[in-house]
View (cartoon, one colour):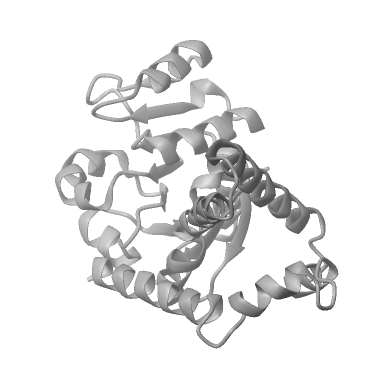
Length: 271
């Protein structure tokens, strides 16, 4: 794995923290890591104490690293840029996981010659995320390998040729875990409506979504449509339910509208 010799993580929240744990698990030396966060969580403080990486060292003591990962909230970039700029050296690769901030936005605020923009998702917290990456001008093949290693530490990596696709990625996989959580939530409520006790219905719904996801993962060479067909007996109970979900006003048009709405919002946030 092409892990960097030195790395500064700016923003050690949920996503930043998940990635950091993945990097350390892959073998990135704690001494090579500096994490900066104005309000680190107790969990991050404990991780720093246990693993020995630097957390919020005194200003001016951090040299420009080989790689700088931007994991701050996008609305904080303007305020944070002046303090981040001294950390960007001529050879520093910036990997940004900020939603809505383009490569041009970052280069306009920081003296960066090499920027990779990434859109990961929250299953990165359990090492099962997926991230789409796009490289800006000036990113070398070696730097692409570093970005692949960093995002691959917490899940799958897909490279894009066009930054304009990031908004659609955000709408599908960036926001997508919430859609799956809503499925579990609504399936549990439907079970209650069918007469199941609330706790039992919630456990059944959660386990069903979890198991189906694992089956999708393990049967990676089988199309989801085939997996669906494999559990659908003709004229059976599953077929009766799917007749509702696959109707003209069913799940497909609803999901299409939902993803379109998320994409529009991502475009708005990108300015």
